[in-house]
Structure formats: structure tokens, C-alpha cells
Length: 302
Ligand code: A2P
Image (cartoon, rainbow, N blue to C red; front, side):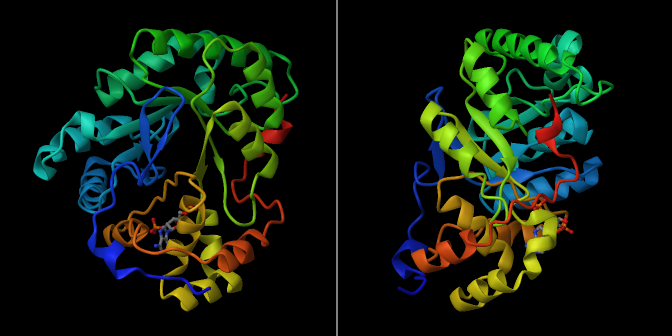
């Protein structure tokens, strides 16, 4: 079967349901989101958020560690009216930084709300299984994770975080959390691309109703020159970034492409008017070799 670009689909606006996934909270989360890592300063955020809203992105992913929550909040406030949108039309994700794990978690959660200047955050994640300043083998990491999750549950129960979840957790961290939590995490956000297909983690998430979400779909840019990716791209007349993003989205895995270039933001959003053939999906999946491009390895955190 060849990759089809269905003209009828191209002309028909897809419904929000086709462009989103259902979370275990009952809320829907868009499949396409803007990653904002390394986007700094209000001028940059204005430019990129504007391009993203115009291109149909409705999810914006930031984090305390990205040091841009203030600018992301400001850009959204300024630009939503221009696009005829209101707060409820967008889905905002932020994350608690490793320095705020454990005793500092409550302050960290409140700080994200204050910096974004929002009444609520749609999804709030624990960014990393370890605590900054502790050695990876320190058992206090586990104690701090448990304490942090209870704080997130409290913010969730007060409606300040509509959904809560985790990022960079491994199977071991997830099993520990799932065994003790009162609120099952809504989302696990991890590195995911054809070289790192995270089979075990995905199966665990599917079994426990946790939405599996991807970051670094482009392998931080490195996969854009992979010969197999380029071959698929040329066969379906798309570019390598679109193929890599579509490979995830076609498996119902939300993606968070980041770019500081408005035209790339636009092209990265053009994912809903073509399909990859099963043959090409398999070809991409067969590239799996467990390679991480993120220099930090969460598997070593006790
Ligand atoms: P830039 O911001 O200069 O566009 P990942 O999402 O895997 O972390 O990859 C992000 C990297 O990929 C960034 O360095 C970004 O660079 C680059 N990038 C994002 N979209 C594209 C694209 N469509 N074509 C080429 N490079 C891209």
C-alpha cells in the first residue's frame, strides 16, 4: 500500500476528537503541542506562539526548568484574542523542576501557577524522578518522589491542576508510583522516536490508562538526516520532521515539536492530512536501538 494523501481529508477540517486523546480525567489533550524548551524572551515567545496558534497548535508545553513560564503565559494572554480563542481553548502543560522535589514541592507548584499567571494548569508533571543536589543512588530520591506526588494530588483536588502526571519516569519509577498513588497519573511524557520505541513503558501505560506522550520526536534534530527516515519522507512527499512526528501521532501518541523558526512550526503542524502506510510505519519502528539523545539518563535514578 502506498502512503495516501487523501484530498477529501485535506479539505475537511478534522474534528477535535480526531486531533486529541482522551485522558483518564475525562479531559481531551491535543495530539499536537508546541514544545518550548530553549525558547526564551518575550519577543521569541510572541513570535513562536503566534505562529503555533495560526498553525492550529492548541497545546503549549513549558516547565519551571525552561525558565520561560512568565513569557509563555504572557504570550498566550496577548495572542489568544487575536486568534479568536480564549483560555479554555488551549491546553497548558508545565512541570515541577528537580530542585523543588520533596519538601519544596508545594512552593514549586504554586510558583508555576504564579509565573504563568493562570487560575489553573491543564496538566502538571513531575519533570524528573530525581532531586537536584542528591546523588542518583540516594534512597532519598524515592522519599521525595512520594512526597511530591502527594502535593500534586493536593493541587489536583483543589482544581488548580486539572490533570497531573510525570515525565522521564522509567518502568521502575512508574510501578512504584502506581502502587502507592491515590490519583493515577494522567500522562507520562518521555523521549520517544523510532530509535527509542519504549515498548515496555508504552505497554504499562496502556494497561494502566496513562497517556503516553512523546518529547524529542526528532531525536533533538539528529534523526532528520537518518537515511531510512529520508527515504520514507521522499516516498510520501513530506519532510523528515513531518514523517517522524506522524509516526508517533498515527500511534495516538501526542508530540511536542519545538522550533524557534515560525515556518518550521507551521510545517511541523501539518500532520493531519496524510497517513503513513503500514509498511513505512514498520520500517521506522525497526530503527529501534534504544538510543537516547537526551544526555540525562533517568534509568540510573534510584
Ligand atoms: P530549530 O529550533 O532551529 O528549528 P526535538 O523536538 O527532537 O527536541 O528537536 C528539536 C530540534 O529540531 C531543534 O533543534 C529544532 O531546531 C529542530 N527542528 C524542529 N523542527 C524542525 C524542522 N521542521 N526541520 C528541521 N529542524 C527542525
